[in-house]
Length: 300
Image 1 (tube, helix red, strand yellow):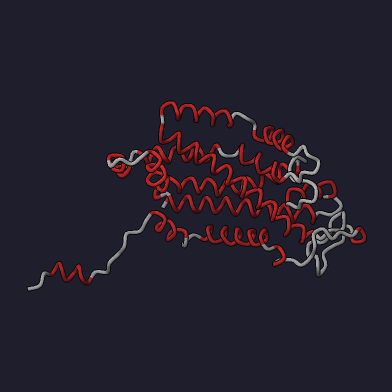
Image 2 (image 1 turned 90 degrees about the vertical axis):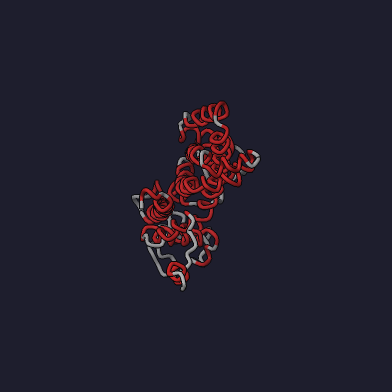
């Protein structure tokens, strides 16, 4: 006679165990907030990489004859005080804003990854030393420190300010990522698979890179996603204060700064870059929150 249990096992569909990332993706697919944020992020990235897809106008083609003119067929947002197409400047402004935000986030992420990984894994005096270093950076008032550093780095009259803003935001914005990585590493290094790898003779570098980091990276990615939106807003803040992008650069922060004194005369040059900036920052924050909720089983 055939074994009934064997028959049931043969008829049951085989299921491959899903990873944490697989479970998170299944959860993300059901969230409207994730899809709204993802669509906004994709649109903004397309504007930054391929602005001619959205407008054929030249943002630097300015004529005083159309100063403060209203919306027309070729310029749906009208013209600013210099006769420049507001819509074209808004679209092309995404390029430098996204470039600064992404690059500064990568720098901050790299610093935070190294500091958090070393502090969490080695502990003791290494953790104490690096934690005090994090506290020291946190003690610097962000806006004041950013103004001083950005002004010092962009002292060259021919500088467009892009490098200065990237370095400033990257150097001052890594502390939260480092703290999150440290906590995740401390939790992961006490797991059984790390102890087993250590008993098999794995080196500290292999333990950190092959066993601990893949299991501690999820909250770190969430922090970087939110930080990207914050850095985009940070570039706009520095540019508005006059220590960010300058020269021939086009960004949302510069557009807001230039349109501010003329807001009572014509509002469009101030409103539209502000709307695009706010929507972009909100999209990255929403995306980070959705990813965090998906990767945290306690929130499901």
